[in-house]
Image (cartoon, rainbow, N blue to C red; front, side):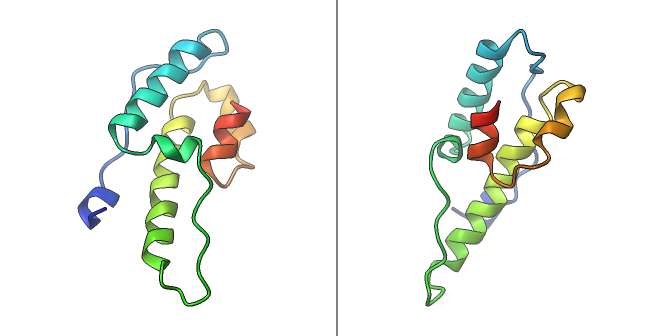
Length: 98
């Protein structure tokens, strides 16, 4: 992934999870992330840093993009739900929780 891709602006969707519209919200999140090449952050585990640090760039890129996926979810849930997401440090467990 190029540096410009890993530093794109926020991912915007036009639906807020309110507790009644999960199917529509989840479909929108999945489709949007798929289009940004980030869907796998909902399903895959992050790479583990190798002892020789040979994959350090890949790990850092994953962390940056995982943060974007997390921000997409946090920014698109009802305000009263946001603090319940604070404990998550990765997108995959956040997604599973929601």
